[in-house]
Length: 361
Image (tube, helix red, strand yellow):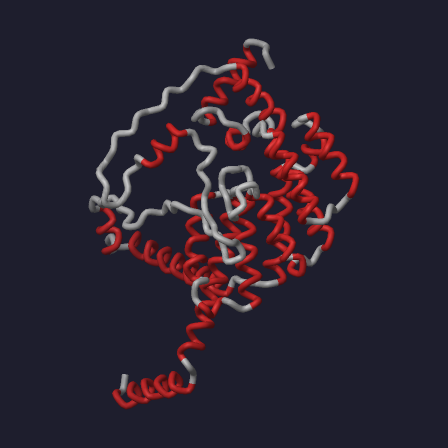
């Protein structure tokens, strides 16, 4: 390139930078990045990948510490992120998002959902999610054998939110009183139905508020790189192997992750008072095992394996109830509903086969 033209281009770029504040440019770029992370979080939620979801949520939390993200538009997306976090942990009653330990994740989600009413285009969808949050906050407590907590949750909703339907309150009171976990109402407004309805809200929200500028740009780059690789492969097949192929034949060293992808806490946005995780329901022996895990600056501690007890009638009853609720083969979902004392989905499958052969199901 001609030196004169090169200098002219540089001077034009400098004059352009001087005419625009860099802080404004940074704000626009940061908004694009937040949009990309928001779309990524929605996708992780739909996929049900908790670890990836938590990692993305942690990144969004760090970004939103910047004062430039305090506008109404960003606040709406931040509220949606915190709402999704509570739904993802909806069945974990020991996970606390607010100072009040009696407020479960789904109850906290109901508080945030009430603030998002203007962001929901479909009034019927907003009402359905409200009903699902109410029913599941009671159903999950009943499934865990906490009937008193289910009754308290029902009273909390009555004091803090308007009931979408008055007869719904009466039905739930009857269900809690009888402890009927197999009631048709709970099956009609199941946790999986809650997830599907929230996904419908996300689809309509993203369609109305596109946040995929960086996503589309990155997709174009990936497609162009794939085209280039295919052209290089065609040329190398006609002649000698390309330099890239030669390098690929060498032994590759396994890549090592430089940063841990595991986060130790769940993000609680500014809408909460003083966020914390409560360990009050964790048994003492499990708590000591958690505290003995290796952390930076500490020595390795040998953990003792907790002996697994034999299958008993309670575990068989949980297994049968899980199959009735989710269907045979949905072992990972059944594991989320009940405490199987450290057993895996394969173990549940084997036990179900034994019960079937013995004619007990």
